[in-house]
Each structure stands twice: as structure tokens, then as C-alpha cells.
Length: 214
Image 1 (spheres, rainbow, N blue to C red):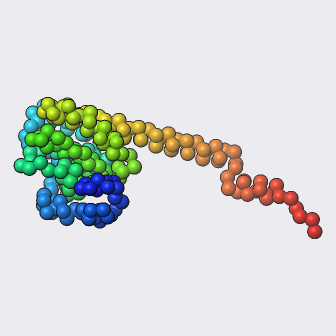
Image 2 (cartoon, one colour):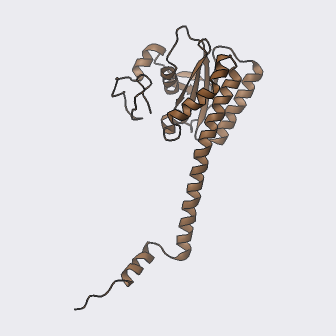
Image 3 (cartoon, helix red, strand yellow):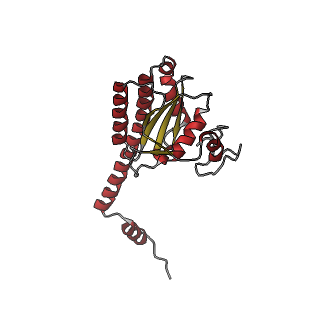
């Protein structure tokens, strides 16, 4: 992962950034240190119409069906000052208690889209477990696709664009993992059918040795 403040690479389990000493304490002082109860779709700014909320909830539900270990959250806020959405997203994903997410899906497997409706900007934060699957380029690409819609205040189209791009990226990783699992399973089955396991290899090796003359 990358530090939310200095954007240098940091080990996912580090308590603070070794480059700038950033930690959760820094953002707790700005946004609060208590857990925040919210839902995966939280429109604190009140910018979505009812039918848009229904549509987005459906997309978020489908995301959870597609990826049983993960969840996707969207937060619309109106901030008095321009925040660092990277830092805000980091804080909310750490402090958020998502009421409509099963406890079997920890926040480490969450993705949070934070939208500043006043600044018409957005940030995307991924939990630690997604580090190997969501690169900085993938996150930047998802936000770039949605950027024109954010500028126009087209909140539904913008969030659907981000969600669609992230779903596509994770889908590729999922299919690759399934292929690897199938190949491994096939290899194991072929080994079992041929009778060439560890014991068989040892026997062949033993039988192939030349006896030394005494």
C-alpha cells in the first residue's frame, strides 16, 4: 500500500509511515477517533435521487455476489474545507462499521469511493487484502474514466463508471485464479492416475542407480 499522506510505499501492517510518520492518529485528530456507523451507500450530501439510490444499491449488491470476500462502499460528502480524500478514505475505511456488510467480510477486503460533491472530486481507497489485485494504475484508471462525470455533477454515471472498471479489473484476477486452480487440480489428477507420486519417483530413482562394485 501507499501512505495516504506522502504517497510512499508502506508495508500494509506498518503502524506508521517510515517516511513521514503518518498514522491513523493523525486523521483521528481531524475526523474523530470513534467508529462510524454507516451503510455501503451513504449520501451524506443528499445529492442522489431515490431512483439513483435504488440503482446504486443494486450495483453494490451485485458486486458482493460477484466477490463473496469483498464489499464496495460509496460515500458522498460535502466538506467545508477541501480535504485530502486519500486520507479521509483511509480513515473511514478503518473506522467505518458498515451495517449492511456481513461480518465475514472484514474492512481489509473493502473498497471505498469517497466523493466530495463541493469540489467535484473523488478518491478510491482499497483495504489491505486488495493490495495484490488493485494497483495504483488500476485505481487511477477507474477515477480517470469517471472524472468527466464528476465534473458535470453526474453522480450516478460517475460512480457506475468507477464500479464498472474496478469490477472488470477484479474479474480478470478472479478468472486467472480459477484457471490456475483448475490447472493445479488437473496436474494433481494426472499424477494420481499415472501412479507417479513421491513414492514412484523415489522408486524409479532407486532402481536407476548403478550398483557399485565391491
